[in-house]
Image (cartoon, rainbow, N blue to C red; front, side, top):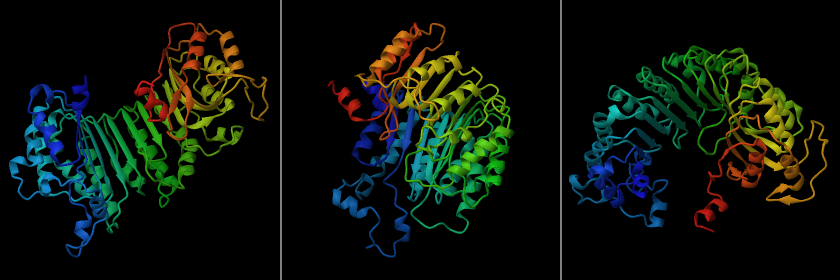
Length: 484
């Protein structure tokens, strides 16, 4: 089991002796067959700083830090290393033995791409391309034309690629006059190279970009089933133009699109500020409902938290009317904005009792929230629910409560919550999988509450699978792994 975990994904980030040992192990067929993914983030490539140096004495952004740490010299820094001992050469010989390799990720930011690494990629596509099903690329907007263009040239060798995941971030270096336009054309060209086989497309942007032109040029992707868009609208492009282009792209692909993810921020955690979150919300509320997406049954909508007042009724006006545009909606994910009791009821009321899976978070988990879920989502099978607090009070929009406050606490759950849930029984509810707990701001994840899930499980009166796994590295998870 340990061997399988170690070699399931090969991470090629350095060209030192450790990397060489890993690739030498792949000469053994039983080890090579364990590899399913290859992660390439070659930190040993020359930094773009080198191209801007006026003389050899110039210091790069990170060279002083490497010297301070006393970082070991890589093999490629050793002038005595022969071609046979070079890690890239060994990797080229070893990877073709990985017949189960299905996913490749390439992360190159402000680095140059020398000829020996280009040759390595060409060899990879030539020998392994037919088996690769998912390709993930992350780079700066300055490097998009070069890296994406390099991949596009070898697209005919990746005949079975189904998933393309693109992330574009800003660069430390100034843009040329045509940088954005060239990047846009490179993205469109790359996507179109795979349009005949692509079923899953992800685009995440942490830099200002003309999304209107991008989605107008992308057009029809005939086999697209899942689409993930992670970005904020560009302030230099009007809401009307951006909304129209994204909307037209969705409608153009509506006959095949089944799973839709819309977020108003980049997918990966990074320093990113945009004043355009509200523009995205306005488009979601006012323009998205004008579309018809007849086959979409999974919707993950990124409604960012704007108000910290749980009684603010204005937030209800930021929730789109879902049934007209998504007649087949069965799975709904709203995990980025806390909902009030009334807000949750508003959402569930729109889904007309058809939901089978729900992931969201509420300000306060109460017995009334549980009863609301049972009555408004009677066919729910999977529930992932985070909360900021628990209580017996079902507060209305004016902040008044219909039940007295609790006086005691068991495992972080007030005693009267225990008593009320213990007295309730929902034998007709179809729930079969539950993840319930406090959502922690510091990590953004749910910390499962075993005790509270036990109460809910007893109320449902049937076998319910509960998810107690920690999905973050918070202190409780760390110590539990050590057996404390």
